[in-house]
Each structure stands twice: as structure tokens, then as C-alpha cells.
Image (cartoon, rainbow, N blue to C red):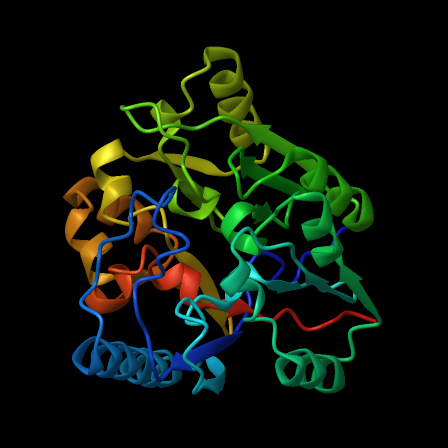
Length: 307
């Protein structure tokens, strides 16, 4: 199935505003991007305020934001809802198997019911049952979709199991593109969406972190065959969340949401290149980035179903 109208991007997102944000001790071991944030009211309030301001900025650009509140204390990563669900124009709502116990508590029935009732998804694909087999695939953190070409990129890690990726792709009719990606000290990249992002006209990625030359060549060839321009990133830029971006589209106008940390890490040439296709939209989320994720992780895209 090929859908050409606003296929890669959406104009609607789900966001979660946490009331008790903190750095998650259960994810610390394999998330090299995570810092030990001070536990306490100041951090929680700062994260709350960052989400509030992010919502206001996105709305000022015409993005529709469905904002949900998390008043609980057992879900320190709830600000990153993209990891536990995704929506698809072909009518699927997908629920994903999460690696850490406390992240599984983020799956909220009210959000699921709201999406089903508001957008009419005909099928709920519940992959969360794979948790019983210790098989994990953390949503659009672990999978970066090229919807235009029906590709699903995934960097293998504890949170991206190839078996689960293949099951997802079989259900959606996508082609899985699994590869290994590591930092210079040999640690696997924990989530694919810190390594790369796919827009309508470009793929931004650190190809050098795909150390296996055959897999690297396959990746580059895939991007070339997709008709999109590859914008290379360095490992240092990846450490500053430059790969953690999301393209949105409002009435034909494309935005590239990113953190201010990421924006400051772009080169002048990269900014010039990206601005051919999108308006760059830096958002300040320094406190939330202490939790190991950035702007893209905060935005769960809502794709309106095509009949």
C-alpha cells in the first residue's frame, strides 16, 4: 500500500506531562545518555515546566497536541510516550514490549481508549505479550520508520529484538532493516532514535557508528534507494541528541522538532542543508535530557487513519 499525502509526517502528537519526573534507576545501566538527575521537587518542577513550554511552542506552530497528565510516582520516564505505542495510517495502534518493569506501567488505558475512539484505529496490535519471553521492542525509540518506503530501521540492543521487529514488520507490511550500532567504547546504542531520524526528504544519521562495514553499506544503500538525502552526523553530535529529531507537518509546512542542545551541535552546513526542507524548531528540555531522552522521545505521533 502506498500513501503519498503527508505520509512521513503528522500534524498531531501525544505528550505526557510528568508531575514527579526523575532519572530512572532501572534504565541507567544501558542508557549512556542518562545522567543522575537530582531527585526532588526542583527537577520535577523544571521538567513539568519544560513540557508546558514545549506544548505551547508546538501549538504556536499549529501542531495539535493531546496532552495527558502523569501524577504518579512510579513512572519516572512517562514523559517519553513514544516508546510504548505507535499509530499508523493503515488503521493499527501498536503496543510495545518494554525492557524495564517500571516503564511497563506507562501504558495507560485512558490514552489507548482516547486514541481508539478519536481516530478510529481498527486493529490494536499488542506486542507487549512478548515481555513474557524477555523479548523487547520499545516503540519508535527502537524503531525508526521510513513510512514513504515502508522500511523499519532498528539498531540491535536489549531494547530492540530482531524477532520482535520482524513480527511488527510482518503485521504492517514493512521491511525490517536491523543493524548493530555502537559507541566508540563498544557499547550498543540503546535506542535507534538517538542514532537517526527520517524526514520526508532526508535521513539524518551517524553512519560511522554502524561499525560492521557490510551493514553500513546496506544502510547507506537503503537510504540512497529511498530517494532521500543522507545527512551524516558524528558520534559527538549523537551524544548531544542531534539524532533525536522528529519531522512534523502542518498544512504542508514541515517542521523539524529538536532540543536546543541538538540545535547548538549542528554545523552551519548541516543547518543550511536541513533548512532546504524544514523549519528547524529548537525546544529547551535540559532537565528532561538528564533522563536520557530528548524532544523526539517526548512526541508520540498520531497518524490519522486513511479509509
